[in-house]
Image (cartoon, rainbow, N blue to C red; front, side):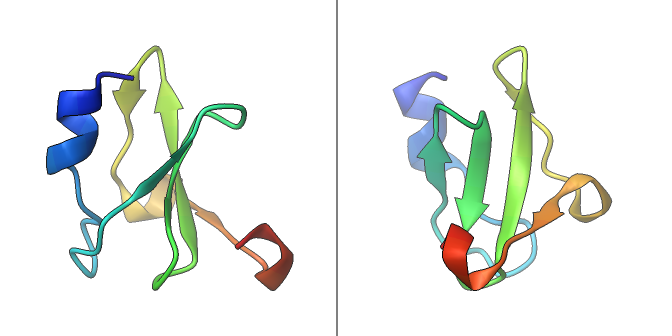
Amino acid sequence: MDARLLDILVCPICKANLEYRKAASELVCKPCKLAFPVRDDIPIMLEDQARRLSEEDL
């Protein structure tokens, strides 16, 4: 994932900064407890495509 893109991406719901988790290919929003998938280096920033995170995942 391009570092410049990571600098400008924010959560589409709360506008918080996202954490990139390379091993899982996800962008994580801790305030919303959502993980947005990254497919072929393209972030899928749709709430209905995001995975709900448990407390252990944070």
